[in-house]
Image 1 (tube, rainbow, N blue to C red):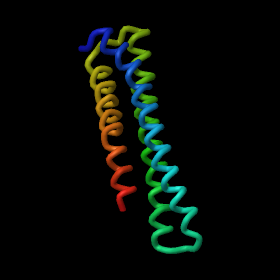
Image 2: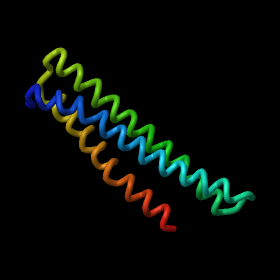
Image 3: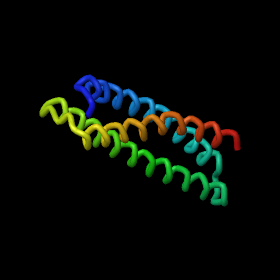
Image 4: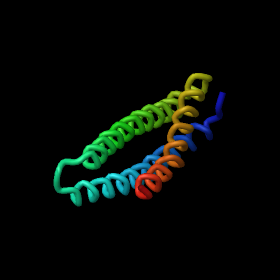
Length: 115
């Protein structure tokens, strides 16, 4: 389906998207950690902050798996010339998920800090 240039571009773009997600996730986790340190005692707000941290780690794991699958498959497609429909679809889906993550994670950060 896709040409070799699609797979080469995907292999270059996926790490860039992962770096952007790592930076944004770091900002979110740092602000949540600051909020937890400001709250000395147990309260509903502390529980909410801890649940937010757990949710962020869950999202981080999902994005890491999507990145790994897309990147490995892009390299395998380039190396073994697997230019067929399923590699195109899977790598394209990984790119879409990562792009959505890069777009939506900063919005989550701004929404979380606005509260």
